[in-house]
Length: 147
Image 1 (cartoon, one colour):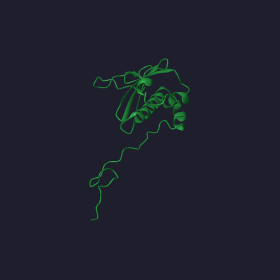
Image 2 (cartoon, rainbow, N blue to C red):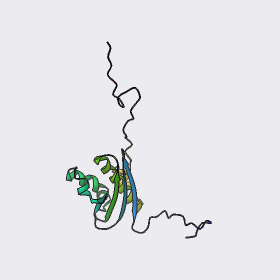
Image 3 (cartoon, helix red, strand yellow):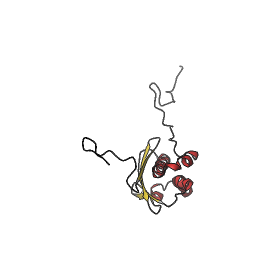
Image 4 (cartoon, rainbow, N blue to C red):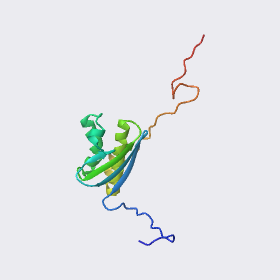
């Protein structure tokens, strides 16, 4: 690869061998995902996913977390390390799912049609509605007294 006039090497569009990244967002939650070939372990904020997402039912957790791998046929082929921040447990889980789907896309761009068909590449745009002035909340009004 040739160097630019300043001596800097432009970043490669293809990630380093065996390392794939993806970012997912949902509500206020952000998940930064790093995947590399391995045995299928999933680590979230330094803990196994089962421990970190203990509040969700085991079946729910498995369905949401492993869905991108299941539909693409890559189950137990990657080790996932993720950093999740902000939001609540369901939002973090959805952000993680989107991050994994985007990382799989970097691994193999041919998976786009499968992931798109199952709705895993669409970022959920729903956010919390802002509070309006002159009101108690986004929609709730202050109590009105006629007399």
